[in-house]
Length: 135
Image (cartoon, rainbow, N blue to C red; front, side, top):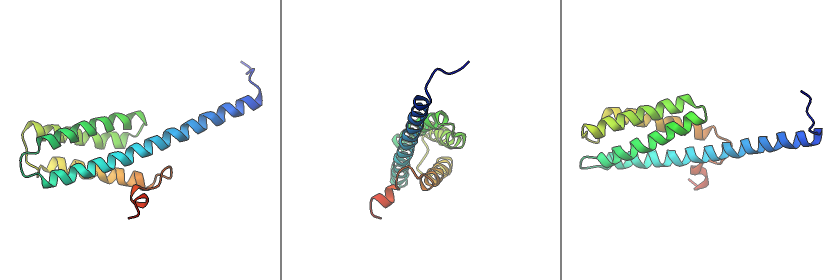
């Protein structure tokens, strides 16, 4: 079927889709940077916890679940798998009333934070939060 769209209109349509795609990538990069900050904060809270950290495990579980869904939507199977591993580990730790030294949670959390750090470092869309803060 032949297109009835003029060449100029076709170019504008493609340009609009590319601009929308770039905007979506920027939003995704910002979201991942935000998640990195939250996971780092939760890891610090977990390290300091003196009583059973069930509420921290719950927060980790919720954030990991959301990130897993977002990563799947953006076709980042590696990130979805890492978030899913933390989701499962934090759920298991909360269910068993584990202490803040639960190795499953720490292993999954370290892997996810490492992956988010690499993604942030390789993302040209938005300057690094560390650089933006002057550190």
